Length: 567
Image (cartoon, rainbow, N blue to C red; front, side, top):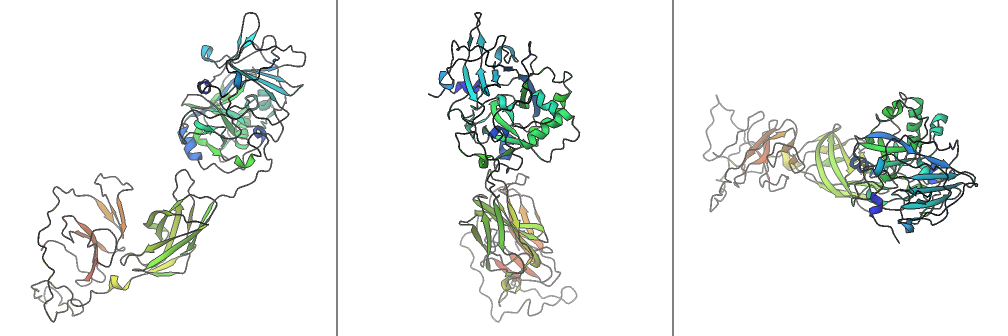
């Protein structure tokens, strides 16, 4: 039977303790075999896909705190054994006689709210005994909330779904920093970690779920490591020994502290720990943001065993590769072209595609589209007739799935985008001519050539007048925007750039932006005037996309100034 969930919440922070008596030293004693999960390096394992989320939810500005509060009692075969008089959670415990020495020490930091952990090791039999919330009666007998025995020569884990003397259901003593190790200058195992809280899940080798029903919090059993880039050169030898161990072996989330100001690691209560607290202050300069979550799944051989692969099966990181356009292609505006890519592994389900010119992003081709299937994907890009041209374009593609690391690739070399014929050619005769046509004087305006303002052979049929005049939108708010070949418009009028605002490629550098109510709906639409050719290109239907129905006309001479209005 599974113990009550409330038992999990009882495992809380323990702070620096000053014990009354001293437990014996274990020297260079090692908990578990070399290939046990506690003793296997994780410095070459991949970063977990949820690393950033886990760190962010665990108060990344919190400091690292070393709590040296756990006495370790050392016994031998001569120590008499006794049964506990009561065990509050018998299904999470082993009902056996325990070798509890006279004057046994237990965790007392925190006073009445202490978790009162007691740890006993018999090096002769390679056995560990751990207790949660012990009490000794006046007659010398002991009781506890929970108690377990561990054979340190094998790899057996507690039954899945059961806690131990800590919330994760794993042994605690193998993760403690012993002062003997710090003195020797080497720690060869992972370190016990306690965070503010944990997600309602667990990963190997943990046996029980955490507290909060949210995937944003790390599960119990999650391995973290100090980032390889963290500089330890300025720290004392003692601090550097601990920090380098956290780089190589990492830390394992095993308890919930309920505190938002610290990432807690734990040590024994050896009186040789520095009394001036200098070491503790050194470690407090390390923060949660200096850690990253590790994907340790490749170490697991059997979910019910602590045995780990010494040489883990390395899973190659996912990749994403642009295959077209990849350099040398020539694409014409006004046509549809297919952007293609390949991928390996599991980079996510969606990608974003952007256009680069000369190495600078100039527009979004597609905010989000399916990554594809079977290792390949594609997107058909309807290229607008009007827009930038040149021979220095590239396409960039990147993954956009939530809780996945961003993977990105860019065309290897430049490709060319050329003008579409309709975008730069005058509208077929007859060209709209204002009626009546003003007679230009040679002293004021150059006489238009027939190619720019041809005189129609017959009066063009005027556009039918709408049967009703559109009602302008009342109190329509003016909004800001910028143009540099790409329109960036504050669509919602809150003077803040947001994803919902418009970013549209319409025109090219050197064009003059124009706005006007081209379709009579009472709202302004975008457009451009190209001084080099006298071409007007306007978004007639106001959908921010170039379509055949949009207007592209030649009206004026090169270097004329455009004016718009309701004439």
